[in-house]
Image 1 (cartoon, one colour):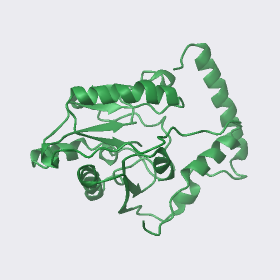
Image 2: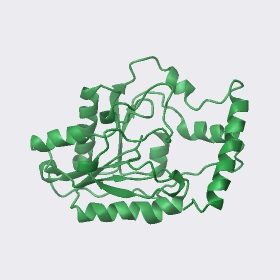
Image 3: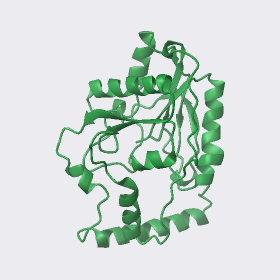
Image 4: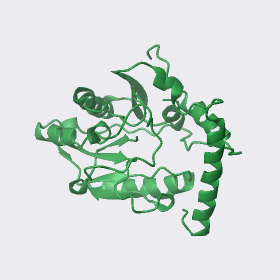
Length: 100
Length: 158
């Protein structure tokens, strides 16, 4: 929500679900269809830029909202190592000409 | 807007990369103003396509992937999604229809709710380079949509 509104897109339909299933949870055909229909309706009917929040909700509890990319003492060292590996890989890619 | 608490992705991302030792905070590409155009046709006369971040051709190394316009007839049964950032602790991407609505669009076309599904869908790589996204990938997709006479493009990132 915050990233897309920051980008200033003309129309945005927000499903408040964990990242990975933007149209609806796995197997939830009803929400998936509703998402596409709502997005198409927004495309046709909006008179100005608009953000619309759907009724879609994750079936479990809301803990995923707290956990996603969370940094705390339990993963601080692991993240630092991950960053070091990431920078090393990027440097290697660049040296091999794998960059845009 | 409803009284709902949304995940603060920008703040979370800043802290996540800061914890990885990146000194420069990530900045998101954005428009200064909001581009807006209202379609001049009813939905039943519209050709519809999809823009996805799910990877169709995973053999191309991630750092040099470019936007691709791919016939819907070549839609992979499983896209590659493991290199993308999504909530791998909470959910999965085994159900393609949870992020790529080919079956739904075909059904809507069959029912006459949209005119038809476009010949091609579009892959856009998730990369750090604003330049690559704004100057190369986005114009490439816009050009292909023009060639395919697309009226509505649904951007559905993972």
